[in-house]
Image (cartoon, rainbow, N blue to C red):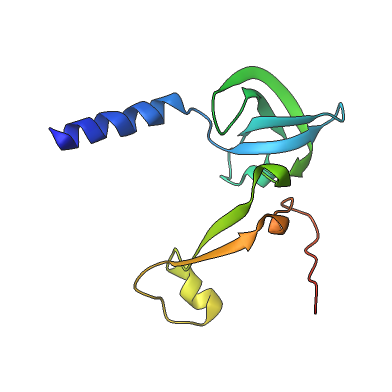
Length: 131
């Protein structure tokens, strides 16, 4: 019975959230929007999207994906810095990382944190402060 309840809960959450790729962006009208990226047929990478369905509401709470489509002029970080205090990250979470890092794959993922100031746009410059 416990497994059935868990399955129904996971199914309900999955059905409630229809968005595939959340994006925050500036459109051609120079306004900021949150949207569900319309992915090109050949990729699952939201940064390759040129259009998105506008999302109304709060993506961390109640929201609705509208049928209103906007052109993506510039992608922003998924959430504005003021909405994020800590970025929780998982490293070595897939086997290809061992080849990229030249390290043996650990028996479990490596967890690490970054400050909210580490958030950036997908194509933005990375600033490194040397002390």
